[in-house]
Image 1: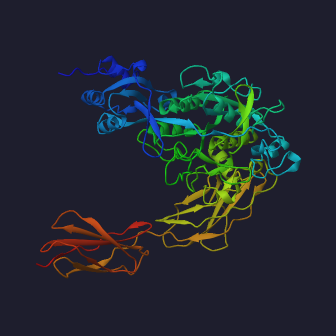
Image 2: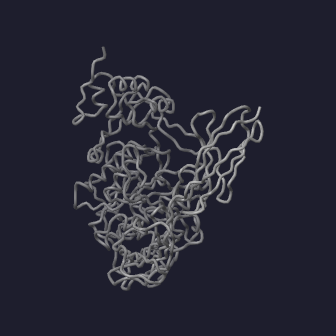
Amino acid sequence: MIKPLNRWWNTATIATTLILAGILEWGSVSAQPFATIRDGSDGTEYMAAQILVKFKATATDTELRDAVKRGTLSLIKHIETEAMKDRGHSGISHMWTGLPVRQAIEVLRRNPAIEFVEPNWVYTHQAGPADLYFDNGSLWGMYGDSPSAGPVNTFGSHADDAWAAGYVGSSTVYVGVIDEGVQYLHPDLNGNIAVADSRNFYNGGPIYTAGQDAHGTHVSGTIGAKQDNGGVVGVNWNIQMISAKFLGPNGGNTAAAVEAIDYLTSLKQNNPDINIVALNNSWGGGGYSQSLHDAIIRAAKADILFIAAAGNGNFIGQAINNDTTAVYPANYDTTVGTSSETAASFNSVVAVTAIDSSGSKASWANYGATKVHLGAPGVAIVSSVPVDTWASYNGTSMAAPHVTGAAALYASIFPGATAPQIRNALFAATTPTPSLAGKTVTGGRLDISKLLPITTTPLPPVVQPITVGNSQLRVAWNPVVGAASYEIYRSTTSGLFGSALASSLVNTSYTDDSVVNGIRYYYVVKAVNSFGASPPSNEMSATPNGPPSAPSNLAATTLSRSEIQLTWTPSPSGPTASGFKIERSKSGGSYSQVATVGAGVASYRDSGLSKRTTYSYRVRAYNGAGNSAYSNTVSAKTAN
């Protein structure tokens, strides 16, 4: 007889219960390998003999015992962060396995006790060394094109335009730097690092080790190095940066990254004075991780942006198209939920590629028209490094902190701005750049000068072609610099608009569910700020459309021992069909779709059939709003 487990679900985790029951053992860290394994040709790596497991709360005693036995599991650490507890999650278990990692995952994935299991991916920073120089142009990434603000480079971030206008950041704004540690007593950083709130998730030691942590120190300097001390300056001169160290000399891993993100999420949620607006993530590697995705979603729900380096190409330095080859964490999307975390209301991830001082995208910098959002300076970027000195680095690692710094600067100028508002402002403030056209979502580069307060009403938006649905129309428009919100107007007559259909819209799209199929509707949008509303946008119109009516008079004619001819009559009225779907059943079995034909076709020749066999058919029309009902059903038997 199997002894039942004592499950204290409200006070103990499944992993703890298994240990107390003698089913699962603590792993011996000193006796285990710390090697990494390269996963295929893309260069991603994971920790040997380590996996991350989330057990189901509904798992039976037998299923739990079977999972431990089949995976030859022992526990390194159970991770149950405060952010997980706040969301009602029981945590994830960082495990040793006696099997090869991929084999263990395959075995456990089929076990009913497991919600998910995945490798403990290895992450590294996205930077490389470049020449050190302090002559003119060494801080080109902070420059703009206004001579009165300082040295000129139009492809810089234009941070100096903000400084010239008196906007230099605020010590009430916080960002998390998830990276290596930071030399917090560096003359450029001393006072801008929230040392008491910083943590080491790499090995539990201090956040800075002499002679190490150059990457984390460099990233921090770009975000928030102080002014007038003989070194460099960051986008913000005043700021509080929290170091969440999870990278070390050999990189970092998923388990530590999850703890770092969740720590910062809980820190904000439990401390109203710690206004963390963004997390800087100048690192990457590994494949998809549900554990990490969940943590990023939890941060988004706490109103925190996740700004990520797009990546520096594959392991031989070739730039990757992130649209076709997923690169993490840049490719995560918090509007997509998982089995253990529902989706956030907006996508908190901002993926950043690198440009050089001439505006060209760096040859090694990843891109993606739908997955990489904007470019920022990332070549020959001078910033702080240990010990008390400076160096020039290349990488999307260097581009991301320019954007993180811009997010923090915007939050200091507009206190109370939400993460979606900051994200939209960053995208609206990009400047079109030829090297990024078709390579990023915005097609442009960071321009901080466009984030500054304006003293006039905004320009009108540009409305895009309307998406048609069943009793529904979706109107979308481009973001407008300086807009605090938007108003949308609707009419059934072109050029004649009354009061607003909806106002105080923060997002740049609106789904109208109050329309009637078959009626044409016209829309314009206005951008609004404290000075008033813009003129109307361009006008766009569309007609909502329901599914088409079913075809009729379906007939089947035997042509040979292997062919049957079908004909039907399309519906003469109702919504227009985009085409027809033909479904077939063999000898009374279930139906399956065998073909589709276009809207102008009303026949189909079904070939390759078995002789002396009866086939039944049905057809339905379809369009963008869905499928029609089925036609009548007919049968025919192939010849001998």
